[in-house]
Length: 553
Image (tube, rainbow, N blue to C red; front, side):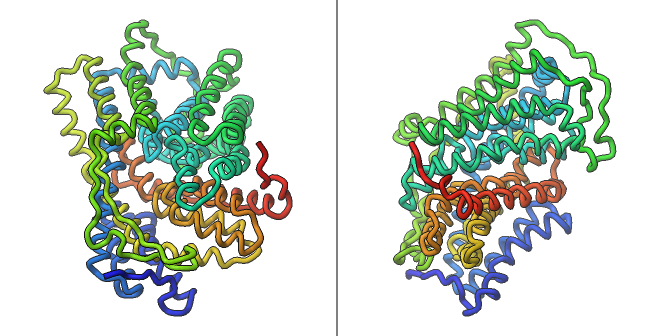
C-alpha cells in the first residue's frame, strides 16, 4: 500500500506545525530542562513522534515502526561505529601513557589554553570534518581536549562550537554534492555561493570560540593569533570553493590554518598565559589566568611513538574519505537491503516537490567503506605500535563497548526519531512554516537549514530534506535558487552544535555521561545566535548586495 504524505492534516497550518514540533520539543525539554538521561529522553521523543505520525498524520503504524527501525540501523552504522572506535583509540592511548606525552607536546607549542583551543578544536577539527565528517571531528577534538585537562563542559561545548564553519564542505564536500545531485543545482554555482557566505563566519567563529571560553578581555589579548587562524582558513575556503570545487575545501583550508597558526606562534606569544581549563562565567574555577606550568620534555623517540597512532588515524580517515577508495571497498562488500514495507511506498507530495515522488529506503551495509572501519584499523595498528598484545587490544575494545553502551543506544533512538519525522512528513510541515514568511524568507529559509541539521544531525540530510523546497520557494519569490540552496547549507552548519547526535558524541568522547542536557543548555544560545547572523547576511545578499549572489568564475 502506497501512503501519501500530508503536510497540513488539520487544514490549519498553525495547528499542524505545533503538532509536528511535539516530538522534538519533548526530547529537548526532557534533555535540557528536566535533566532526564539522554537515552530515556530520546525514547520519549520517539514515542511522541510515533503518536503524532500515526494519530495526527495518518501514517500506517507498521510504516512508522519500520521507519524508526531503519533509522536505528543508520544510527549504528555509520554514526555509532565512528564513536565506538574513536573512543577505543583514546582508551588505548590513555592506558599506556602516550596520551600524556601527546598532551605535554601540545603544551610545548603553547601553554595557553586559548591557543590550544584554536589549534585543536578549530584547525584540527576542521581537517577531520573535511576528511570524514559525521561526528568524527567532535569525537576526536573533544577527546584530545579532555586529555589536555579542559573541563568536560569546556571540551564538549567548545568542540561543538568550533565544528560549524567547516561542516558545509565536510566529508570531502558530501553535503553540497548531495544538494546538487538530489535537487538539480549546478554544483559549481552552489559551491561558489556557499563559499561567499561561510568565509565571513570562518573568520568570526575563532573569535566567538575564545570569547565563549574566556570572555571578551581574554579574547582581545590574543586577537592577532585569532585573526591569523580565521583569515588563513577563510581565504583558502573562498578560493577553493569558488575556483576549484567542494571536495578539498576544508582539508586545504584546515592545513593552511594549522600551519599558519603554528608558524605564527614561533614568533608571537601572549603576554599572559591563560591556563584555566574551565569556562569563564559557567564554572566556579573558570576565568583564572595562572602562571604557566613547566612542560616536561621527552625524547624524539617518545614523541614519535605518542604521535604515531594519531598520525595513522589522520591518514586512514583521509584515505577512507576518498571517493575512489570508497567505491573500491563498496565494490568488495556493500550489500543493499531495500526496507520491506517502506521502500518506495511513501510519496512526497507537492508543494515540496513538483510532482509526487516516492521516498526510497535502502539500508547499505557498507561496513568496509565506513569511516568507523578506517578508525578501527588505525586504532589496531596504533595499538601494535604502542606494543599492546592482541589479547589486550581485544579486551580494551570490549571494555570500550561497555563504556559507551548507553551512548550507542541514545544515538540509535535519536536517529530513529529523526528518520520517522522525515518519512511521516512532520519535518516538512515545519519547513513549510518557514517557507511562508514572504519577504523575510531569506532569513527564515536560512533558519530552515539550521532546523534541518538540528533535527537530523547532518547537513547532508538537511540538504536532502529542504534543498528542493528552498529552490521552489526562492523562484516563487523572485530570489536566486542558488542563494537559498546555499543558505540551507550555510545556516545548517550552525545547527550542528545542538543536534542530539553530536551532543551525545561529545559527552561520550569526554566520558561526561548523563550530562547531555548541560551541554545542550550551554551551546543553544551560541547556535541560534550564529544561525541568525547567517540569516541576516543571506538577507543582505538577497536585497542589499545582490551582486554577491552572481556566480563568477
